[in-house]
Image 1 (cartoon, rainbow, N blue to C red):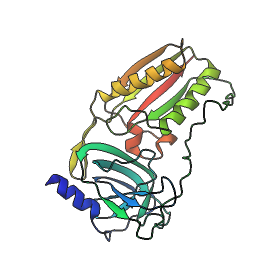
Image 2 (cartoon, helix red, strand yellow; image 1 turned 30 degrees about the vertical axis):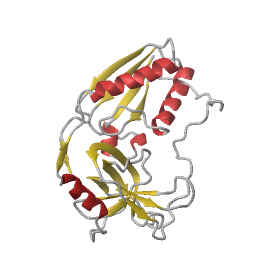
Image 3 (cartoon, rainbow, N blue to C red; image 1 turned 180 degrees about the vertical axis):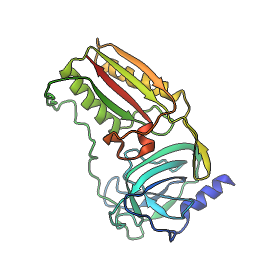
Image 4 (cartoon, helix red, strand yellow; image 1 turned 90 degrees about the horizontal axis):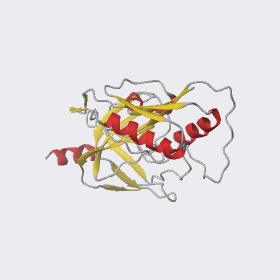
Length: 256
């Protein structure tokens, strides 16, 4: 029954509630795929807020939904027109996969073109491309990587880009030590009528994942791992003004 209710919410017609540009929306729903075709990777990911009945275009998330599972949607209403996919665009937006199964559903294009694929703004360059040496002077600095809800998996391109920039700077700056602190959003919150909280231990998993990555990329540099539960939101720009995303993080601190 729960699965059926979630599916109905995902396929509900657009609600009459209006969303204001810049408004933060957060909900849980089954994602729906629209089979638009403007070339490779041009299909649309859509999700309906069960509280308002309003369907949103969540295609611009740096990590994509899986239509077999529900997603936690977090994003801000964009002023962009609905034309590409037919629904209100969320940008920035995140779609974290949750361990709740959904029934797959695909919509036809219905005249909507989708988006022509282009490289994401956070796009790591091939290793064959020389990195510019960051200018000094160098001092203590923090780089932050981000994660999906309750996971420690590095997000393709999004985290790769941040880590690549951090490693390029660290190689030039030559700090004495790195301290990686993982965080977990373990304080319970209610979203779409459900109470959710990350596992406290995911803070340690995130710290150790990033620390191991840095040890492989920067052999010989001491790397210490720490972790904290009960993470609070931050204003780091790479979280794109999404409070929940800023909580699910690991910080890399370079010490001199």
